[in-house]
Image (cartoon, rainbow, N blue to C red; front, side, top):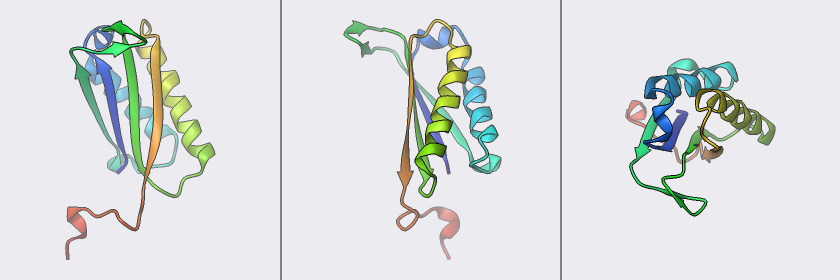
Amino acid sequence: MPHFIIHTNTKAIQSADAQTILNAVHKQAVSNGLFDENDIKVRLVPFEKSLVAGKADNDFAHVFAYIMGGRSTAQKSKLSEAIVRKLSEVLKGVENIAMNVYDFEPETYFNRKMIG
């Protein structure tokens, strides 16, 4: 926890290698101060075909962040802005870059380490 899942088309990531994109998101998540670095997970999911703004294979990157609830709207907004700004630097030719944050409910979250 937290999970950052980057959806993008394969053409968009030709301007920067996948590891650079993953590292950029990871670095921004760390620098935001909301998470322990060892807990951050970042994944990249490239799509071969897409339709964005009515155009086939229009370049895009969208980050879906899943974090434990309890952060303020302002903190989540700052996180989204920082990551979108950084990806805009890394993916210079990509016009459609966005992010949103979803909260996990602490009361319903369970993982393997919690098994007694």
